[in-house]
Amino acid sequence: MTTRITVRGMSGGHCEATVTKALAAVPGVSRVVKVDRKAGEAVVEGEAKAAALVAAVVETGYEAEAAA
Image (cartoon, rainbow, N blue to C red; front, side):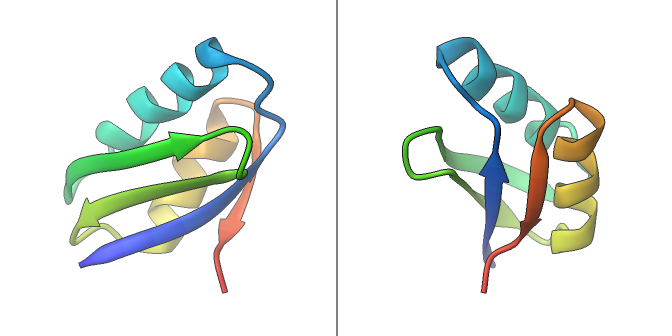
């Protein structure tokens, strides 16, 4: 399953790396497909719930929500 979330507040490559690391650590994530600061989104594959992905990103200090 592919899940897309909206992420706000990323300004550079370090931000993308931080969000990627947080998402990869969520149980059920098999692969972080992309984290794109310009598009303000992250895409992951696996069985992780969107709420768990959002929570992981929020814990790193960025704003996030499940994409519509």
